[in-house]
Each structure stands twice: as C-alpha cells, then as structure tokens.
Image (cartoon, rainbow, N blue to C red):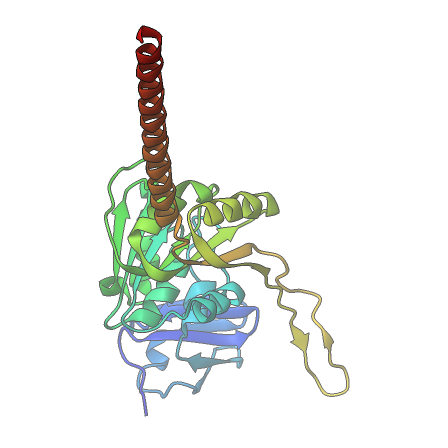
Length: 302
C-alpha cells in the first residue's frame, strides 16, 4: 500500500476536464469551482482514495502516470501527443538501456516520455538552440523526476561540424527542415539504428524521404495517427464531440548499407583495367607499325 506524504505527486481528479497535478505540500491549498482542496487532507491517504471539498464535492487522489505529466506539461512549443508517443516507442523498439538522440527538445514531452522508458540504464541526449525553450523543458523534465536520465545540449546540429554522440540506438527529430540533419544523424546512429521525424506537412515528408534514400536508410514508413474518444454511458453511448484529430505526420526509417562505396571501387577498378588494356593495345599497335615500317624500308633499299 502506497501512502501519500509530503512532496508526493498527486493527480486531483474530478472529471476528464477538471484535474490538477501537484506535489503535496501540507501548508498549501487551492480554490476550485468545486470548493477548496487542502493538501494536508491528502497526507496519509492511499492513492485511489477520495477527498471531500468544503462544498461536499469529491476528488480522487490518483498517482500520476507519464500521460498525466505530458498532458499537464508547460507548453513552450507544440508538444508530441501520447497517441503519437506510443507508436514511436513501439515502432522504434525503444527499451531500457538504449541511448537516444533527440534533435529539437521543444517543451520536453517527447524527452520525458522516452527517458521514462530507457531508464535506469539508458540515457537521452537532447539538442536545441533556443535557451528559453530549453529552460521550460528542463523544468518539465525535472517535474517528472527524470533529470538524471537526460542531458541537454545547446548546439545547432544543422550548422555544427561536431559529432557530439555516436552509436545511438534511436534518433528523434523535431525540426521544420529535418532533411538537413540526416547526413549527420547517420554518423551518430549505430547500424540498423532507427530514426523518427515529426513532420507537420506532407511536403516535409517528401523532402525527408528523398534525403533518407540518398543517405542509405531503409524500411521507410510515413504514418498519421488519429484518436477518437467514445463517451460510454448506459443507454446513450456515442462519439465525443471533442477529440484530438490531426497533430502531425511521423516518418520512420532505419540505417542500412546500400553498398554504394563498394560499387564505386569496383567501377574504378574496371576503369583502371580498361585504361591498362587500351594502353597495351596502343603499345602493341605502335610496335607492329614500327616493325612494318622497318621491313618496308629494307625492301626498298634492296
């Protein structure tokens, strides 16, 4: 049985649209339309218990999940939603112990989610150029208790010649022009390493796919994920009038080796052989011509 104590994270849940995520502080309370909720009243209770407000309304004391942290995250930029996060993790095979490269930290929702999977033996190396957003992301990552599994870098990988990390298992790219970093990402990934790019438009998918093929990536797949909520109630179950439709397109691929370097070497070898053969042929022809000329002069002299 897990009891709530000072500094414990708690999701105060009233309904799907009214819920509050906080760390318990016995001297704090907050005012809502359903009444005043005192933190001290939650201390000592088991997760899943309910708490009455001064207006005789109740809230449930739930233990927050990563989904709750992501949906309550402070937004500095557009976040990657759970409906997309789940597919990214499953398709890329993200698991404990892996090293993850992220380009474009944003608000840190994807960063936090991935860190929660690869911990405790894995690590996320995330790169961004906007210090303002990086500070927001740092707070969000810290709030979810995952700071020790994330290293933030203020570095523009689109222009930097540096290769800061290598042998990454998965690369996650959230940029407006992801195709620019593909050659560099290839150098940072291990063989067969996966890549996922977040693309708001189909034009981006087209340019990205061309860059992936050019840089020897295979198993390329572009998808869109739409979720529809169902309001299930006795005798009147129906689709919800609210929901999350299109958020982004996802592009997946894996690093491969097309044998292009070997093919070039073979071509060069063939060219060299051909050149030698041609030279030999020319030498032989010249030798024959010289011999023929000497014979002709000898006959003329006689």
